[in-house]
Length: 115
Image (cartoon, helix red, strand yellow):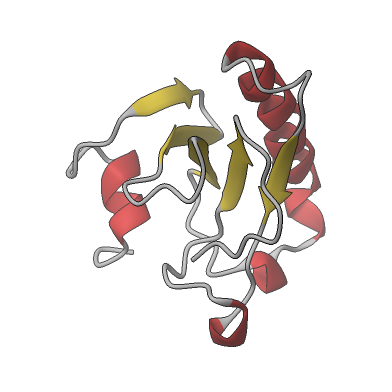
């Protein structure tokens, strides 16, 4: 998608503080963090939202979760706890319509809403 900001990050057209990347996914720091640690994890394939995952996406969904665990360990937040959030659709607060999972931690999170 030529207008998708996350696709532009994947294509290196827009800079990002990338902390992990492989052939399927990318993880980078959120530019408006909602917690001490706030990383976005995205599939490189443009998928509009969580609702658009299909059976063929099972490997990338599993990969996202497993890599989220590894990233949490790498960032030192795994032992104290972290949260994975995926907003789906406008009413949930999804603002960028390229599926993305928020990895948050590094402090007590309480009731937190991610946009």
